[in-house]
Length: 253
Image (cartoon, rainbow, N blue to C red):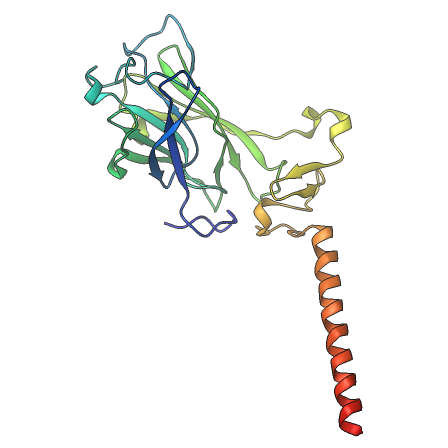
């Protein structure tokens, strides 16, 4: 499975899972998860349906955490979830599950939860999941057309009951998207923002967009890049003209 056309990559996107056994002093890689990106790990509380307390569940001791809905509490059956997108660029929301504390990830224990429409998709960062009031929550961004970086992101929140089958897409709810509002940006920061790939993006206009591919934007390439390309081509043309001149002088002699 390749990356989507706006990703800037042509290969499969994977997530590496690392484990620490000394409270974060050292880490070792224990697994790769295929077709997963911008994802975070979470576990469910030892007792499902817990509603009295809530909090961020992200970095955990898998050996002491419960397996979550529908599973036993034995170490062999403990479940760790990985929630994010299937690739970079506008992509579907995807959930993967490990049954052995993150050591292995069977593709059959993964599921696309939500797809974008009309070529749109979702993006996010490795932000924590929140467990509260008997549900697990995760914030993401919907990337709408025309894919202008910074202004076409819309915040969404997905959630599911702790007692439901999390690998069943019907268990999840997705909030209505909240469009980006330039008034949220402090005035001193509104002139320019830096997009991935070191492009300058003028907020509120259609001057640059995602990952160098264009995606319907009017200027997918930065001004500096245009100047560099122009100089390179000019030098090459000048060198060719000089060679042609020398050849003609030698030939006419």
